[in-house]
Length: 372
Image (cartoon, rainbow, N blue to C red; front, side):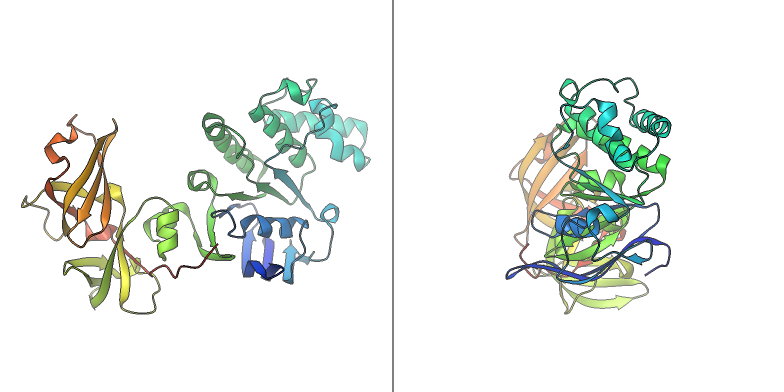
């Protein structure tokens, strides 16, 4: 726990009857960070955000903003603003009046209101839309009005609850870039709740992957993707090929595992997640694997598995293969289309081998089967 944290949760638990939505959660978000709570529906991410904002009271634990405990304070006495998936704009007010609403309630002077509203609308690139009503705007523009309304109050932190969920894919991608730019411009803490892995990875400085009311793993996007520590994180953040194995040896920064069908796979020791026994799962991402005909020469020292192609799909930029390994797992390979070849040469039914650099291998603990 750092003294310069904008937001701290200490041992927060939230129960709804017999259901524990958030289970003994502790986290610290540094000042000015773009922090994402990522996970499937029911994992506790929105409940955690609502407790930061004061919309839910924790069953136990404490909430701190800027070093001050705010656990018992109502939302209007917390120095945060929230942007919801539903824009919650006043349809009878202009865009300017919607953005000015919070300032007017605080009795800020008219000249300052005009200045700050103008700055906020320029920030979200809506400076020319101030006189329009919300119904005259697109969904993406309405969401940016909601964002300006939250930022105009200069809050300590901005809480974003699935803010892009109601938009189509093209608009979502546009606003992802704009949100990141705005956060960098204003320099305040953003806490973003989403179930969309790409959304979190494209914007957040730190991603906390939630599962069963707890943070399963947190870190930067590249670290989570390349070094997942559990089966859940490996599968939720992208696609992973996972093979049942046992740890057999460790030497000079590398460990050896043996799959259940007898293949030996090497893995760097720093890519081995915490596990309670020798029984683990060895993983590799689909784009890291090279597919070749059975018996073809592979690079020296590479990990190798053998299998049979089940599906070969030409997707333009890549060829997507599904291969049944000798051990029975269905593995995925994304092979980049570098030479214009079609999948016929390694089509369904072809005996193949999958090879990859051991540096791209990771080991995770097996999923415990915890429900969301």
